[in-house]
Amino acid sequence: MDSLNQAETDITMNKECVTLQISNHLAFVTLNRAEKRNALDMLMFRTIDKISRRLRQNRSIRAVIVQAKGEDFCTGLDLKSVMSQKSSALSLLWKWLPGRANLAQRVSCNWRKIPVPVIMVIQGRCWGGGLQIALGGDFRIATPAASFSIMEGKWGLIPDMGANLALRELLPKDIALKLVMTAEVISAEAALDYGLVSHVSNDPLQQAMQLVGQITDRSPDAVAAVKKLYHQNWLKAEWLMLARESYYQIRILLGKNQQKSVKSQLNPEEKVAYLERKKW
Image: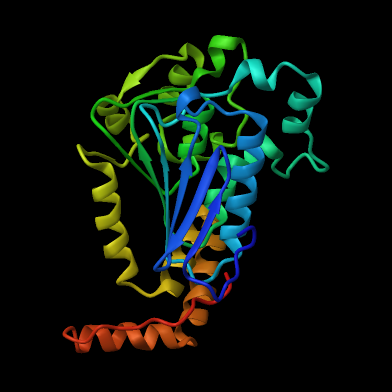
């Protein structure tokens, strides 16, 4: 099925390089080029962009888990494929307006715009473009053997897939500079110490599912509002954060899901059925 109908809760979308499955309001996006260590070719860029944009419009989902088949999450660009034609590189970088995301940036930035938690489940190598994709998520859970690298400097480039937005939020500037300038490969434990990953787990998918369970117990309107509030205002002026905080709270109070949250706290033995979230 090629379209995501908001009224549907069970969807499977199969592409050769990336798959999407939505079941019980939970979306699984799977990088599916294990034989190429999930290195990014043009089809992967376009498919990730398409899936993430459509998930943003699907108001029935409550969470997204991004995972990968095989030994590695993603080893970066498939250079032979992407660089074999200059038109491919240009299509990645082209944009109409300088401040808008191009195709290369959207595979990272689009996750930030989906109004539900996006959790990256990482194993093996998460290098270059793979780390850029992962940094677009709200949470990153990695195996102890995973490794990470902002690899672009190795090729005489700078990271340009949108993850600098996350780096400035997550890392002290000197640490970010060091990782970008050296292209150093670091362990999962070092990534955890730096703040690049949220958790290290022997079973990251299970831990991701536990986190999904905790978050989906809360109002989808509150979850969507706080994600938008933080991603759009984390480094903005104090007055703007305060203004939007109050505005979002009023919108939440006027909705029925907040009343359901109160009811769930007063009657914890009753399972709450939240309504479809507002459009944020």
